[in-house]
Image (cartoon, rainbow, N blue to C red; front, top):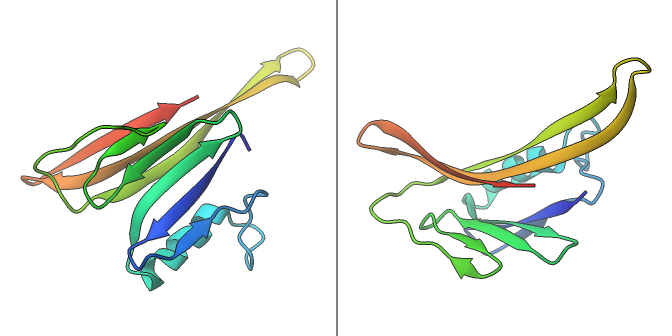
Length: 128
């Protein structure tokens, strides 16, 4: 994996993604599924962070909604009750004649959503 995630729960405990991205007791599920199961038992997710082998770090703080990119912090004003958004999008570049995969790109999407004045509001970072 290009980036692995770490999450800090509201009770202060920490969850780290399995490098194989596997759930420990459900082989067909991912580490993210395991994180969401654990979150309920620890009062929710406070901080979610992606770290890459290239030395870059991206995080979202669900307590106040701010993002950090390599310790550069953004501020969010007047919103609350942030819920985690995290997913990966895969793009496969194929040779259509041989059906051979020529390349595989992954985009990581990290952010939050909240309800403000009855409307869904989202902020998402896309990381290539």
